[in-house]
Image 1 (cartoon, rainbow, N blue to C red):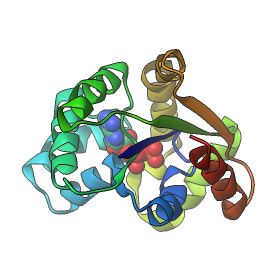
Image 2: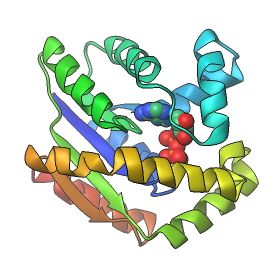
Image 3: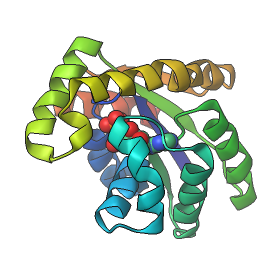
Amino acid sequence: MINIVLFGKPGAGKGTQAEFLKEKYKLTHLSTGDIFRFNLKNDTDLGKKARVFMDNGELVPCEVTTAMLIDEVKKHPDTAGFLFDGYPRTLDQAEALDKFLPTIGSSVTATIALEADDEILVARLLERGKTSGRPDDQDEEKIRVRYQEYNEKTAPLIGYYKEQNKFYAVNGIGTIEEITERLTSVIDNL
Ligand SMILES: Nc1ncnc2c1ncn2[C@@H]1O[C@H](COP(=O)(O)OP(=O)(O)O)[C@@H](O)[C@H]1O
């Protein structure tokens, strides 16, 4: 089983690249953002728990997110592997994943970060907000909160995975195809 964590700031292109990678490597794509948005739209109990955090650009509490993720992983016992997109986003979550995966005989294979400058990313998000309908992409203040959350809570994961020799960085600026190429060359050499 191969488990890839796609890592990057909001707007870095994780979702776009995940679409290609999941096809190429036959991976199950788990995007916590997408799962939350689905639950919000359908007004489920999970959606109700996540809404205020998401609307403000804050992270949803770890217990809620991790329970949800584990449920999703368990739905795919026969998969060739997972492409985690948007999880883990805190040290607690990374530790939770490192505890859980061995219970299904697995582990994180690699974490690959898509890197880009903040100004480019904020511009991308505002552009996406015009068509995506995502409220968290339409308001610079919320975008700012998401970057603050990233810097405080998610950036420390870089050191966490580097210590395990599982961290790879890829330049996230270029055409979609160029970036896919960079990602696949990392994965093919794992
Ligand atoms: N692993 C997570 N932990 C906590 N909250 C999360 C997680 N993944 C997604 N969320 C919530 O969903 C929102 C949108 O997620 P996502 O679409 O991945 O965002 P972005 O485009 O900012 O990377 C986040 O701002 C957060 O509120």
